[in-house]
Image (cartoon, rainbow, N blue to C red; front, side, top):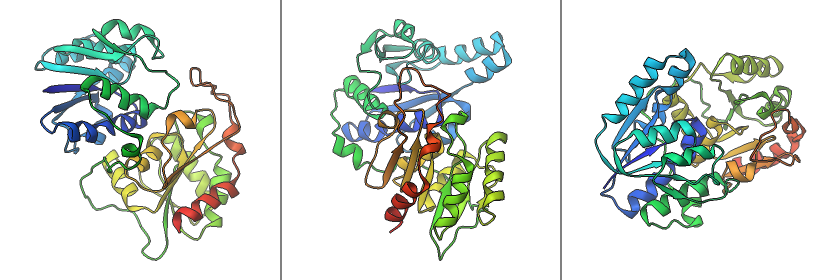
Length: 331
């Protein structure tokens, strides 16, 4: 059986979908799994042993350049793919639904119109699955795969998953301590209201005897990293990392602390201890708490159907609460 999974972006969303791969293979090792993804995220998938082939697409670039010829070229690439028994759209957006429908297949499966934010996407599927939109995103992904393939995955299996991100073991040009714990701080996120205040991150780094590393992915996040270091000179700012390098670094640290963003969710995928901080986004939906992966949510009442980007309640999370959990995890 040949299946194609469509999950185009973003980093954290792809991570939350990839957990399903190991359960598909445990159910039937003979299933061939290909994955369609935006080219900028290929580093998450290209070294995964359970993926047969990664198909890259550049819809984001075509949209940015407002180029219809580029968009149609990307669509033609999909039409030329070999025939699949099943295509599964795990994203549920109009763009991912169109991509899924263009891939030659016997069945194109996705969530029904009541289960996704862009209900029109369901028009492009010839098989549909119903699942509450506000349900935990990892549970939604698993249930979609269960429906598609007839397998069963228990909550205990998800809690005790195998690490599922892979990288080339390159030499990292980062100073990891051999005598103290290494803690990775993530100051940035997709929008400002998701970010924990830099002053509190800096304070945090002075209250635990550890080697603190700060990562960033764009110019705005670099400014945040610089502000943390200005307030706490002992922290180390990493150079800009590729996805491969970020996976490798995360696999070697003792704890990750950050907001609801892809780099923080990588720690969950690798079974590395983490503390994920939630303000305007729903922690109960966007994460999977485990013994080693903790979440702290602000007191804000979050509507998962409409995120309030003016909700800065993450700033109310006390540093002392993070410190308490961090010390437990490090010990």
